[in-house]
Image (tube, rainbow, N blue to C red):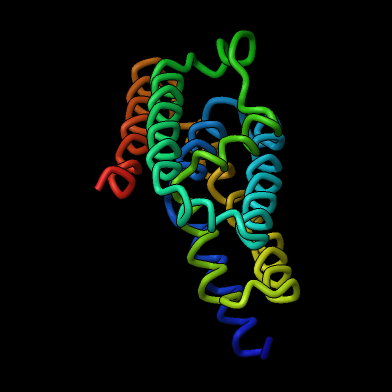
Length: 196
């Protein structure tokens, strides 16, 4: 891989991981409701899940959708159902004091598992690998996985930190409720590309 292609790949990975999507909306809400430190397992889970998904797609998992087109419909249905459930949980999250006693952010395994039903993660994996590793050779797939590994955590950390800063503004139950409902609606809105 040439230097210019590598820089393009890193830029692509940054844009993919830093722009709004299900993971970043959930991290913004998690940062606001639980703080940065308690959201770390969620953040690491996103990175681990993405890297496993990218590796599996690079190893040929995408061919399943070509052989069994119905698998894509099943994946979409699972994604929509799970994301609607998550939106419900976000919309009904308690105040930070309540959240620390009752609620908890996603665990590493939950966040990693979510990547398998996250439409944006699939889109990033399929487009990233087809653009930067079209031959699916091991070095090319490894380069894509490594680029996302280097860029993902710093990118998603920004969303969690922003959520933690927003937490300072959510001093009343009404503000927190409005914020959580907004985050839930944005998460549901992120389903639009999946349903079209």
